[in-house]
Image (cartoon, rainbow, N blue to C red; front, side, top):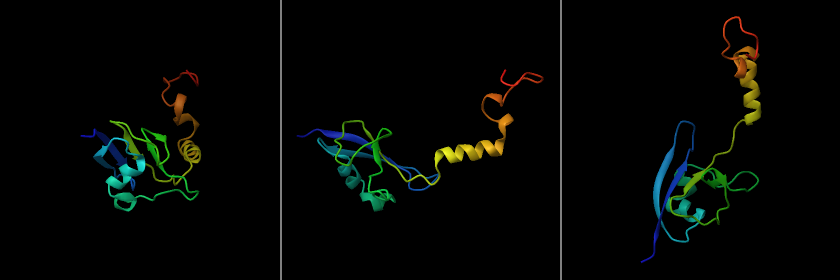
Length: 116
């Protein structure tokens, strides 16, 4: 009898919503096999690829091609596209908070010098 791999498939089709499924796949299974075993892209509420055709999948937070083989205990993750560039979001947050309320200067003792 062939060994079965236990794999976790995780995705977040919308903000504040996380889907996690425990899958048992035959040895030699790939990322594409895991997605198919979970019901496919549409059943998970995800798009199969970005506009440039690159798949939006990974194992344990690292991008991987759909042909990548799986090992027992892997966490397959499906990613949705970013709606805002993280650098832009950080700049906007900093602008809203102001220089005195962010980062190193957030908690300084009363009467203390900036940066101490």
